[in-house]
Image 1 (cartoon, rainbow, N blue to C red):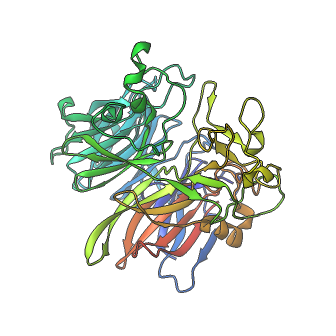
Image 2 (image 1 turned 90 degrees about the vertical axis):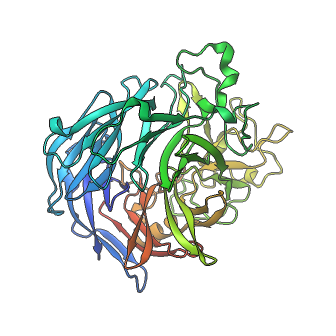
Length: 510
């Protein structure tokens, strides 16, 4: 059965290309139908439960045909990257969403957002993804694609996620700027900020301002913290002279992924770089880059092997983790008598593999094929067997000592969600709770992949892979809804007190 994962709305979508509505109260293979007995577990005395109530299925399996869901009134706007469109669904009956029409443009749709008054925006990457992309603005109230479209503006390369500021005065898009598949060129990452009027109309191109990272280059006006991960081949941006490569290596390397806004500030995940950028929306300027540091897997457990024939969540000395969040959300909570903004991240993890470059290796590969060995003094030297930690995939650019061996290794993703303050300090991390909860309530889904039911299949990668998080308030309590990309389903935590989040419920319609 397919995996499911959450995107922005109180709904989750499946790699069967399905949209599944969830009610806050309490099939066959590759189908999005509501299963007779969804996996469901709640904490004792939980004030909230989640129940699947309906779904819409495109019939396209495992091909990114239903990814991001944006609700607006009685409609759902669903990114169908397979078809390169956004599908508009009538959700007046959540038990039976019905397709109305598709919104399309040149290129592939990556993200969609709708303002409270119905002004919508879709991020389209260019046919050649390293070229500048564009935003299509539309009226979400219209009944057909032709009358809905309002206009387009050009933005940076590979616009991956678009959102509105909370007051609706800006559209903000993360231009990821991934390299070409053969790593022949590598565009600069950036964040475009588009000033909007209160009207249901498309902005002019002159309203688009782009915040880049040139100030963080060596010799620039701003200092880049050494913990911000900048790595890999030095490949020119489209049209760039190889002689000028040193002028924008940082800018090409940083890849904006996901955005949350708070007032006139945007917080942008730089997933592969294990950092969050802050952007002043009024100036369209990157004001800071916050490194997220490392998770210590000797203090909390993970299952590192897909070949040990069992579920084995344990601490591992010498192993650290890169949080590498994908989705990010923000909310306000009272701390020391005043309202304070907190950031919530879904710590998925992601490798960089383009052309012949691959930044990952299994622990049992160190010391082979030109890769430096693990130091004999490292506790990881005794963890290289397949049924130990030898199968676990880690990065190769961190952990090497001056002696030329690796004293510690760094795995992908935190397998968790975290809460941070706006200075990048860690307030809370869920540790190994996701894997422990799957082990206890759905062992048949423990670290399965999105396209198979093999227990433990993803333990050597990034485990359950928390993909995204959205925040909601129910009866005065603040909740985080975290979607798991591989195992599927939604974990719900009460985060009213950001220092003491509490597990509430888990549901999975897989």
